[in-house]
Length: 268
Image (cartoon, rainbow, N blue to C red; front, side, top):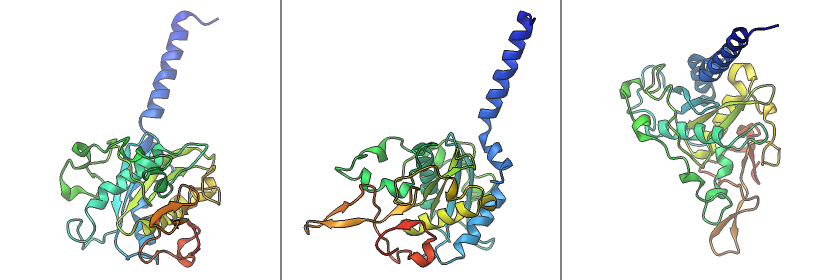
């Protein structure tokens, strides 16, 4: 039989192991192939494609399942800099999108930030959600700006919060359909942000986190694709989403030829 000391020792070891496993989830994502270098090369490759929109460079933030920032990358070349060649404000927006997609997706239902648009408008079913988890500016704006987008971006390791309710944020799921984190993309139109995020997710770690792993969603495809079903209501100028979770179309809206199945709507 085990004595009391053995039982206490075993319990202590279990607690320590559990704590270690839960405390360093960014490290676990790295083990699954979501390293800074792999994420940066993936978004650079995707941004080089035709994704609709304006063709602008992009920011991407990766968070773990607790919303901790693991990586902040952009698609700039080595001859460009973040103060002049990309929307600087999109760095924070990408982090908010990642946090929102992670915070409101579960192992039962994935919700992209695109699908939060109509629901959070006045009279929408989730009105007010956009103000529920404000970003912490003391964390998101802290640090040396010359490190923005590098392996030592000042947001790395922080839980900055934030909610964003237009396209560009998607949860990540492994092959067991378990949510492990999320990505947020920003830097172009919100529709193109969503398309780029979708294509990045399809490509990360050889496709290990693609849409086939998404357990369920509110789009017609039962996933987290953008729904473009906003119409004019009764001809008086009010916008209404047929599903209640629609997203507006955007300038140079991505068509079916470039959206890779990430958008459901009349033009697709």
